[in-house]
Length: 72
Image 1 (cartoon, rainbow, N blue to C red):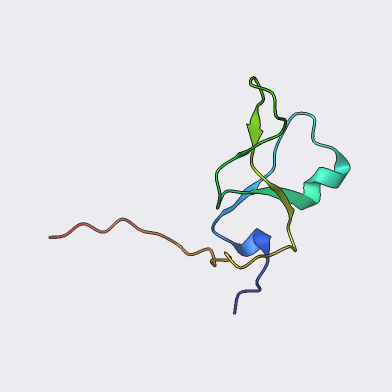
Image 2 (cartoon, one colour):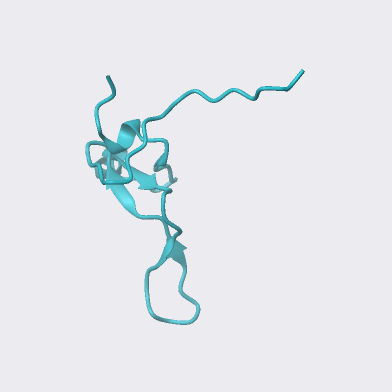
């Protein structure tokens, strides 16, 4: 049985960056919703929400192996 946690979700992406701090090793990015703007300025960049590996939400979907099937 899969534990409901962001690290076990199909929408979880490992948070990697060249400037990753020790604290960020236990975090990842939630790819369920689109990136959100960080400031109200016109040239603002958007970012995916940062979540902890043990967090979870109502959008949790267990990671499953996916294989391409070809109709014969």
